[in-house]
Structures are given as C-alpha cells and as structure tokens.
Amino acid sequence: MRRVGILLSLVLIPVHGSFAEGDGTLASTLEVYVFPANGQASDQQSKHEVECYDWAVSNTGSDPFDLSKQSEQQQAQTEAQVEQAQSATQGAGARGAAKGALAGAVVGEIADDDAGKGAAIGAASGAVVSRRRGRKGSAEAQEQAAQQGEAQQQEIAEDVENFKKAFSVCLEAKDYMVKY
Image (tube, rainbow, N blue to C red):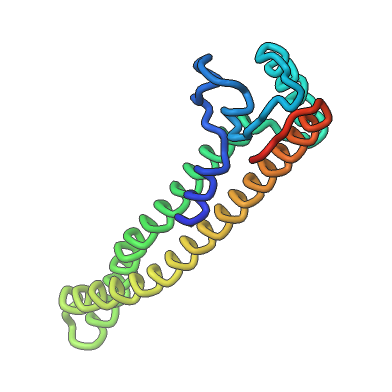
C-alpha cells in the first residue's frame, strides 16, 4: 500500500501545484515537459496546452485534477476501513467476555452452586477466544481493504498515465517536443 502511495505522489498532479498558483504552465503542473520545436511563443504554447488538455479530457474521460482528488478520498476511505477493522477486534473481546460470563455462570451454578466463579472463568475464556477470532478476522479485513485500495489507486494511476499520453500526442501534433 505504501509503495502505491509513493508511486501516486509521483504520478498524480498536485491540486495546489504551480499552475493553480499562476507561476507555471499547465504542462509543468502535469509534470509533462514541453519544448516549442518551431519557436512558438509562450502565450501560444499556453493556448495549445489548454486546447490539448481539453482534448485529452474529452478523449480519455479523465481529468487529472479530479483524479487527484479522487485518489485522496479513496486513500482516506481505505484508512477508515482499516481502522474500523482494528476497532472491531477490540469490541470482539468484550462481546466474547459477556457471552463467556453468561455461559460460565450457568455451568458454575449447575456444577458446584457457584455462579460467580463460573462467570469469571467463562468471561476470561470467552474474551481470549473472541480476541483470537477477532484478530484473524480483523487481519483479513485489513488486508482486503488494503488490496482494494491498492487496486483502485493503480486504476487511478493508469488513468493519469493515459491522460498524459493523450495530452502529449495532441501537443506533438502542434509541433512541440514532449516528454513525461
């Protein structure tokens, strides 16, 4: 999961990047390097970049700024799912203790007329068993959430890559040298 996050931080476009602040070009914000092969003026290059950006969005169906926001939201959702799975383990121990206490009280009352002692033993064993089961289920739930998050992040990275290809093709058609 960490590896994908690092990859995405290199691939995805920062929403608060230099283009948004006005001190760079659209291409530089997208981390695409553009050279005017026919000496195009910077204002003409900016116009072409905007045209190619719009063209790439319409042809890929992806807007990299929206993808960046989507990636952040998805990462937060994955983290919330992992935390939820972890807290479920803690709740499992308490529920197991309660069930064990009830069963222990019944057995203790029947066996030696001491419901309190049976409840204490049942609570302890119920908590231990439930925590073990909860940890196993929690680990599986955490792994599943992480795998789903990683798959979604990979899809977003592929969408960004496809957008950059389309953006670059358009600029190359307008006589620019492009690398990303």
